[in-house]
Every structure is written in C-alpha cells, then in structure tokens.
Amino acid sequence: MRNIHWRQLLEQPATFVKWLVFAAVSGAVCGGVAAAFYYAFEAVTTLRQAHSWLLFLLPLGGAAIVLLYRWCGMEGDRGTNFVLVAVRENRPLRLRTAPLVFLSTILTHLLGGSSGREGAILQIGGSISSRLGRLMRLDDKDSRIITMCGMSAAFSALFGTPLTAAMFAMEVTSVGVLYYAAIVPCALSAILGLWMAQLFHVPATAFALEGIPDLGPVSLLQILGMGVLFALLSILFCRLMHAAPRLYEKYLPDPLIRAAAGGALVIGLTYLVWLWDPGSYDYNGAGEAVLRAAVEDGQARPEAFFLKMLFTTITLGAGFKGGEIVPVFFTGATFGCTAAPLLGLDPSFGAGLGMVCVFCGVTNCPISSLLLALELFAVDSSGMLAGQNLCLFAVCLAVSYMLSGYYGLYSEQKIVYSKLRPEFIDKKANEDP
Image 1: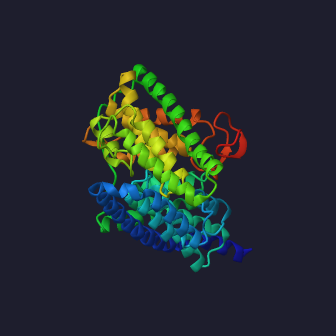
Image 2 (image 1 turned 90 degrees about the vertical axis):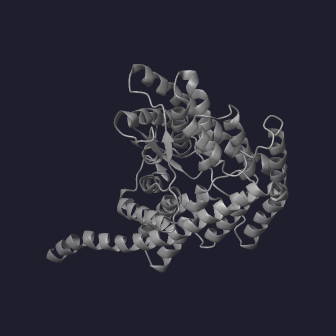
Image 3 (image 1 turned 120 degrees about the horizontal axis):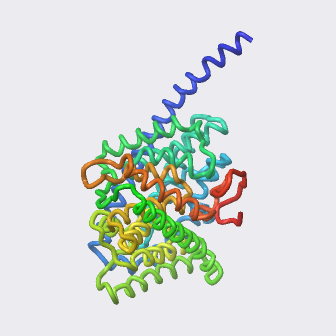
C-alpha cells in the first residue's frame, strides 16, 4: 500500500513534466510549419492578384490536386474530419497529409479557388503531432492529446489566438464534452506555436471594432434578433457545404472531371460577378480584404455573404483543398454588416458579431467563439473586449449555438449532449436528433 501511495504522489508531477516536454516539441515544430504556411499563402495570394490570368488554370489545378492525392494513396481523404476521428478514436494520421494539404491548399489559392487556411493548418498540425506521438511511443490516450497539441499550436501560430486555439482543439471533437486532460498540453503548445510565429514575424489577426452599444433592454433585444439571424445563416452554410459534394458525386462521378468542372464553374461565377462589380475578385481566395472592410469600416455589399458561400461550396465540393472557417468569417461579417443597421446597430459591430456567431453556429463551439471575440477585437481602437461588451457577444453566441440545431461543418463531429435539455444524445453533426 505504501508503494502505491508514493506512486500516486509522483504520477502527477511526472505527467506534468512529460507534457511540458512533449507540448514544447509539438508547439515548436507545428508553429514553425504554420509560419512557413503563412508566408507561402501570402506569396501566392500576392501573385494571383498581380496575374489575374492564373484563374483560367483553376480547372487544371483541380485535376492536379486529385491526381496528387491519388498518387499518394489518399484519394479518400476527408480533410479535417480525419483529424476529429484521430482525436476521438486514436486512428493514425499519415505524415504525408501535411505536405499534401500544404501544397494543395496553396495551389487552390494561387489559382483563385475560394477557401480558407485553418482547415489545412489543423490537418497539418494534427498529422505532424500524431507522427511525433508515434516517434515518442505514446500510448493510446496520450496520442490523442498530442494530436490536439498540434492542432492548437498550428491554429495559434497562424491566427495569433492561443486561447481560442487551445479551447477549439478540446471542444470541437465532441460537443458537450471537454477533454480537460489536454488543457495544460494544448495551452502550452498554443503558446509555443504563437512564439514561433512571432519569431518569424507572422502578424496576429486582429480588428478594431466600432459602435458597440451599452448593455440595456433595447440592445439586448437587438442582440437576440441578430443571434436568430446568425443561427439561420449557419444552418444554410452547413447545408450548402454538405449538399455540394453530393451533387457533384451524383452528376460527375469521376473525381478528375468533377474538379475540372468545379474550377470552370468558379471562373464562370467570377465573370458573372463582373456584371455588377467590374473587375472584382472579392470572392476568390480567402477574401480577407473584404472581411476587414466589413469589420473595421462597416462596409459590405449586401449580396457578398451569399456569393462567398456559393463560391466556397463550389470550390471545396469539387475537391479543392483549404478550410471553411475564413469563408465563414467572411460570410458572417458581411451578413452582419448588412443586417445590423436594419435592427438599429452599427454595421462594424454587426460584422464583428457575425464573424464569431456564425463560426459558433457552424462549429458548435461556443466557448472557443467567445474566446475568439476576446482575442480578435479591440474596442474603439483602444482596448480589448471586457465586461458588458463581452456580455453582448456571449448572449448572441448562446442564441446562435442553441438555434443552429445539430448542423455542423464537420460530419465526424459528435454531438454528445442535447442543446435543448440536459440529456445524452450522442449523434454525429447533421444527423436527425
């Protein structure tokens, strides 16, 4: 009994030291790769903007991505869903996932496909850290934690949001259950990832938010109304994202033809947009300039949110690579910027609300979304959100989370507890409750 007692006393310090080391390694490696991804992403975006003719190569680029995955034996790759399964069930992630998704995402953006970057970086971080776990001979449970460490480090490095990154890795896999055993490793990895990004001068994502109202009965009703609208928009985004690949597979079963056709559709849509906005490439790539204009200047075209959803679903549904979260930010911000004045709110504030609340609706991650608001937004260019300002975001996020139902971007995400009552349901996102 005495030996057992001493073993128990030593277990916690030993585990703490172990994760200090493992989290540091994961954070440094994944943070460095994320920094390289950031600079590659910025380089191809600048190149595409300087040479608009690259858009015409998008069908060829789509076919090249399909062939690349086929040659590497990963034609059935399901993107971020594989990372969620790896965390929940400890299924191995292949190291080749990292260079594959790195190259294919860069190619998608170089040629004008509409996608984000966080889906790619979650896969990159998860696959690298999963490999590190195997090299370190971690057991089943610890392998899951180190995969979350890689997700946290890469996300934090790319966006400069360590709190959000750590919580998102723990929250996104199983809605209603937090992997608290991973809180120290994920937090440490996120901080190390951020430091690596700062070492390579990767700027953090941040916005100056204007027009936040005081908390009162009128503003509370306005916020509740915005939350309802964001929940409906979240459902629409998820339904479109899941409908697009099914329609492609039904009518274009050959992946090569599907990717080429998707590229051609994006080209056609781009030139249709020119009918009312000549020379615009706002919906190709990530669209971060439009996003920033909506949040900081309160300016967005009323149709922008729908067009971004359309461009993104056509691009990713066809087999191009990238993430959905930056397009979600774009969609939420431009919709919020347009809808907020209709309810008597400042368009800049509405755009900020839309960014995080639609993110919450499509990922089912309210705590991560609240931390995202805290880390992304400065109030009137003078300080971070706090107090009653943050309460406004919390209420809107709660409404969006509750009313968005059991939809989600990731089909492998588990909804463990009901959103309406304290009961266990254990279903996958997008299934009927």
